[in-house]
Each structure stands twice: as C-alpha cells, then as structure tokens.
Amino acid sequence: MQPFSYAQATSKEAAIATVEQDKNAVFIAGGTDLLGLMKDGVATANTLVDINTLPLANIEFLSNSIRIGAVARLSDVAFHPQIQESYPVISQALQQSASPQLRNMATVGGNLLQRVRCGYFRDPVFPCNKRNPGVGCSAITGYNRMHAIFGTSEHCIAVHPSDLAVALTALDAVICVQGMEAERRISIHDFYLLPGETPEKETILQSGELIVAIEIPHYIYQSYYLKIRDRASYEFALVSVAIALDVEQDMIKSAKIALGGVAPKPWRAWEAENLLQGKPINAATFTDAAVAAVREAQPQQHNEFKIELVKRALIRALSVVATEL
Image (tube, rainbow, N blue to C red; front, side):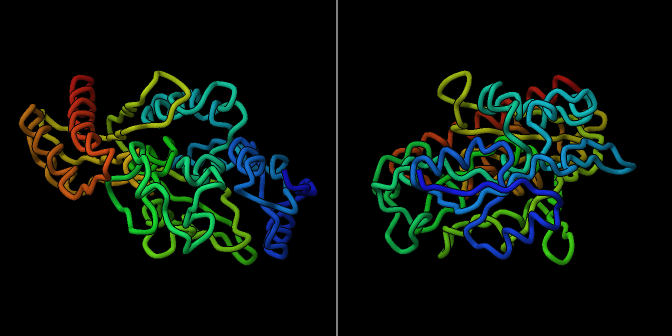
C-alpha cells in the first residue's frame, strides 16, 4: 500500500481547498471502498482529508423535501423512523447493502461515489480502461455475467454498484455539492456519466468538489426496493428495482422506476413509466411495462439472463406495491 499523509478537516472550505490544490489528495469519511482500492493498488492518494468532523451528518425534514447530510451513516439513514415511513424504498435499499458492520461505517456520500465492482477493474493485472484509458476492457472478452446490459460502450461494460443510488434515482433526488466558489445542485439523472469514450469519468464532479447533502422531494407515493442477488446478504445485485407508484382508484396516475445491476449508472426505465401512466393495476399492465423496460437491452456473452430477470423482478415489484395500496 502506498504511503500517504492524513489531515483532519477543520472546515468545508479548508477541506475543499486542500483537495483542489493537491490533485493527489482525496476526501475520506467511512473509507469502506477507498481503503480497499488503495490496498489493492487500484487507487492512490498522497493525502487523505478526513471530513468526519464536518457538520454533514444531519437528516432534516424540510417543508418540501428531506435533506440527508453526506456524512450520515448508512445505518442511521436506513433506520430513521421518518425515512422508513415516508421513503421505504431508501430504507429497504440500504438494509440490503453490504453488511451491518459496513453500514455502520459507510456514509451516504461515499456510497454514491463507490467505484465499480468489476473484477477486472479491481485487479491491476488485467487491462482496464477505467484505470488506464486506452488499454482496453478485459470484461468485454472475459467472463461478464455480472456486467451491464444497458448504457455500455466498446470501452466499458461495468455496472454501478450502489443500491442507494438506484433508490434515489427513482425518487428524482438532487445531489448538493460544494466547490471552491459555490454550492451547486445536480439532478441525480445528470450526476452519473455513461462510459462512452471516457469510461474513467464516472460523475460530473469537478476537481475539489465535495458532496455535502442529498435532497429528495416529498412524494405521496408507495415505494419499494427489490434486490435479486446470488446470496441473501453481503452481495451486489444481479438486478434490482426501485419503484414508486401514485395510484388512484386502481389506476396508476404516475410511476417512477429505476433499475440497478444492469448499467454503468442507475438506469431509469422511462419507457416503462410512460406505459404505466393511466393504466389499470393488473397483470397485463405489469407485463407490458416489463417488456418495455428491456426493449433497449444489449446483453453480453454471459449475461443475457438479465433480460428475463429484469422483467420478472419488475413484475414482482409492481405486484408487491399494488397489494400494499
């Protein structure tokens, strides 16, 4: 592991200035992803700037939104009574993430910025365009069962690993980031980038910018998170579905659907949402939405099964929510 120095942040401004001025400095809070990457030689940093002492852990219910501080621990968010009541999809997604020990350490901001779990990315022996642009993507010709079926390019087919990001995408969350000059608010739909020609760029964060909070609009929706994985705990999603429905008299007024485990970013199923709007709650409607959700899928050699898995997971999630209304 490369030697590094450690600095405890005294203010947001000081922390941001340190990372802005030193291109080899990075923020650290829980460190549950970063330190593993450093130990494996995938990530390097000369200075770790500890932001745990900053006042960024509050969970505030505002007049028209909830604001979750970036340093809030996943376990605190998952078991917050008002989040469990108003945003069950968030609580369910977090309770199915990692392990209890990791959830007690990991933070909201760090979870959204965790790197892909592609085995080829995390092993420096293999060529990887995310680590070294231009060397090629080993996953495309390798074993790609866990990889993406949407939003890929010839340079990368890795999937985004965060359960929380999928839930937040279904809820149209806004990510608040602080830079040297001002805070800016970024829709989660714009925050993550598809690999395209530059797979090494995963978000639109600029140098030195720090996630300070996530804001989620108030919705009168019934929400639910379904995660399909190879084992019951401490495993990343093969496919996940975050769903929020607004229903009136057995008719779907509006639907919000995000998919995980299938794309380089949380994947919003816009076509399926549009199809559901104004339709009755029944098996035929759910099946039509599932077919629409996978219409643009482009599977790899070993993950074509994900197409059917997405369809079945979406039908199941819709059915669960419908029975709870």
